[in-house]
View 1 (cartoon, rainbow, N blue to C red):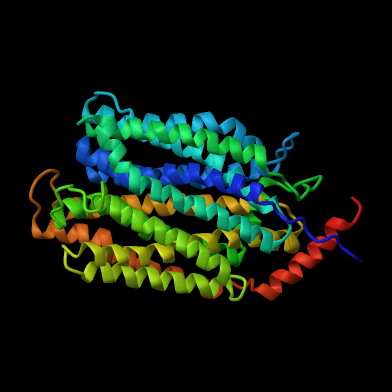
View 2 (view 1 turned 90 degrees about the vertical axis):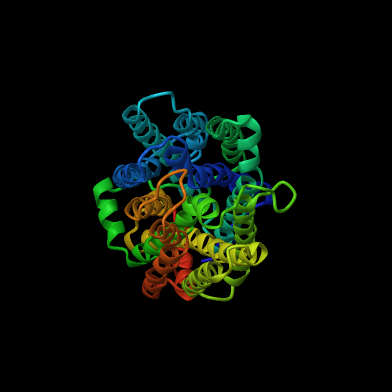
Length: 459
């Protein structure tokens, strides 16, 4: 039987889909860099209490992420299954993000409750938008090559979010705060909320769902059972969680490292960029470079092998950074650029692999559960962010950190553990997990061919 070749995705749609991840990238990068510092150093909350908050919200996500995936898989509307959530989630997405940093003048206990409630709500809205956003990638084309190309645009904008936070984040906080750092953080988040609103609307208006849904779906519980016994999904989820954990831990502890270990006084080192801003910018530029490399290399090499290479590159450059003199600004920046390359490669490959797994599950079980499968990517990223943000709090609280004071040797060691040593170590099991990923390019081509034949048959 002759089959019509998959429709090629035009540049406008690739940009429209990709810019949606600028919204979530700005959100997560800002949270990753400023949340722990805002709550602990500026508001005096206990590091261990904030670490516990970040971990407990993952128990909520463990329920809500797959639930949101199953719900969006079963959504039927004139706009499709997944696109409506970009439209209706755009306003609350930004609003609850700002609410986290709009902390009123409360007692320490009241402020801790505020942090727990608003952060949990912010992550719920993030799930409401980003699980369907990930599911949309799985139905934007039946071709793995086309999905891979769209994923590269998504990761480009994700990396751009890091550049924007790196280049503008600390400057906006300083200028908008007028000397009040906490206020500057809140108003900067408000600016991010406005940008995110238009990004999500752009995704809604420019994209198209090309894979028609099945007339019936199985039970949600049955879909979840099918997913948790899928070996490739487990392998990629482990690699993604640990890969993001390493980056998030470095981001969360970076301000502590530069202030208390490197002795940085906040002076600009390049134009208006101080050392933390240069650190974030180097990571983001490296991430864009890694996205470009991975998009080119995945056409010639197995994705699982490239993920292992990316993890090895991240671990080695993290430790290279750690071994340098504290005042070696430009050598450290170059090493951080290498970390970004590895991170960019990991993320573009992981997201492409999740959509490949959705096709694999459809082929194996005849169940369309794209958003549920891709919900794993959202859960993996949020879990990695939570673990990475929680690690510094747990470690520095055990090693004697005291905010605003000269730190003891054990506290300095704790910051170094959170900033470099543990992030490098956790990447090792992520690479080992990839040895169990068994969907190679030949298998994927056979799956696509058979699914094309199934979908071409009359209902």
